[in-house]
Image 1 (cartoon, rainbow, N blue to C red):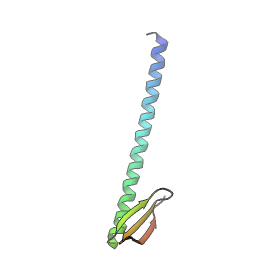
Image 2: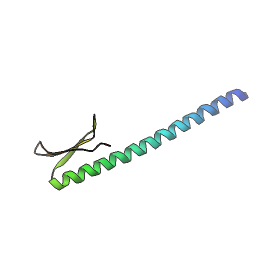
Image 3: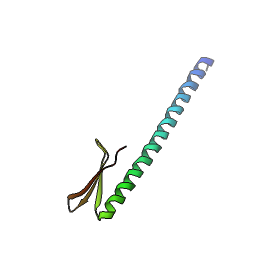
Image 4: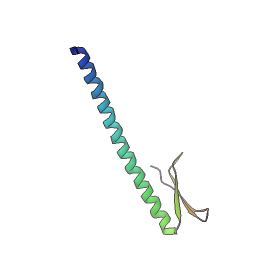
Length: 78
């Protein structure tokens, strides 16, 4: 293997390592945000004795549901 091939492979693998590190950092931050929203919504609905559902398709909205009926809706967004 000549010097040029080795250098190209080193640059490719370093780039992949940097991209992987950035992705893992983003995933950890996003996961901790999800856990925080889930905890807040659970606490809000536990006071009412309801189960909860979090709609995250368009906005972060917490729904407290008792007997298939919304008893409380709260925006959880940033």
